[in-house]
Amino acid sequence: MNITFGGKPIHLKGTPLTKGAQLPAFTLTGMDLAPFSSDQIQMPAVILAFPSVDTSVCSLELLTFNDRLEGTGFNVYGVSCDLPFAMDRWVKANAGEYITMLSDYKDRSFGEATGTLIDDLKILARAAFIFDAKGQCQYAEFVPEVGNEPDYDAILDKATEIFQG
Image 1 (tube, helix red, strand yellow):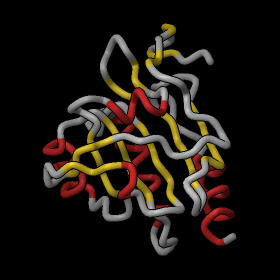
Image 2 (image 1 turned 120 degrees about the vertical axis):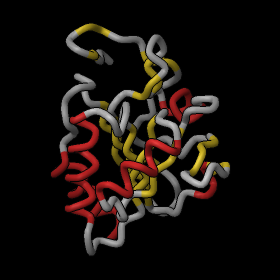
Image 3 (image 1 turned 45 degrees about the vertical axis):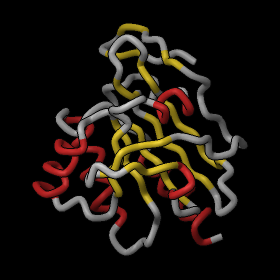
């Protein structure tokens, strides 16, 4: 898999999560600073990995998803290596009520377990995963250029199929 950041190739640490894989074990941190483990993910689920709420593309991605998630009832989780304080600030400033924000800042176990950790920068690559009710990955998208937006329509179409099927 070839992923770039600013047009330059990057190395992802861990094994990239693929369709058919089970949700791996990891521990994140909630905005309340409490640990949040992978077994707390409500299935079916959409997990969005992104570099930072403080970048324009990430903020746009989260705003776009948040707007399009209204009324869906989807379980959606946004994961980055941002501190929980930055995530909380973003949610309060942008009314991001449809995405549960979680941080991988402590040990980056999510990044390594999903293959989204940009090793040199210690941030996450942009990716989207959709898991069915049994925790099996039914959709995995690694955005080839980290600075680009994901395929919103493909993600939401597959999420609709999984959540309503």
